[in-house]
Length: 208
Image (cartoon, rainbow, N blue to C red; front, side, top):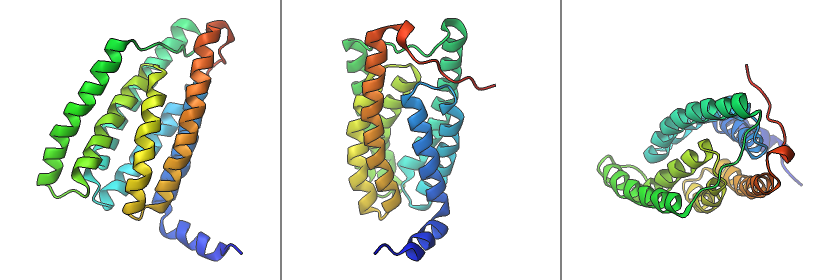
């Protein structure tokens, strides 16, 4: 039988991680539906996990949240402009050149950030740096409305699950398992919206 008292105690002790868990889930689900309101929710999740990762000495992940804040603000503006001009959030294809440039940028960022993380004593410096770097690439693609972001998120999030289990961030590991599922849903929804054309795309929610 499930021990509800123990579960309630875990959430109470790890309330910050729990809040990050909930806001991330809601924010990513809204993103899969291409709703503009996803961005303020994701922004709250970025700030919460900035604190969680800093406390766990996952400095690359903490730094990643700072970049996420910047990308979230940019994505919010970029999607809002698209809604204002086109009436919806339209999916944009990513060509082979874009794929290669993104993957190369991720590799370069992994090397440079890994070198830095080793010198400041971060946990799992090279792995965390690589995941951080490619997460930035995926975030940029997401802000630019490229379906390719979901492919990259699936790979990155699967690896993150193992890292967070190792660091005893169990709730966050569960979160990333759910994020993989959401990424698959996002991939299918965005591909369907692109193939059907703008007329069949769901209307995004507006945020004042």
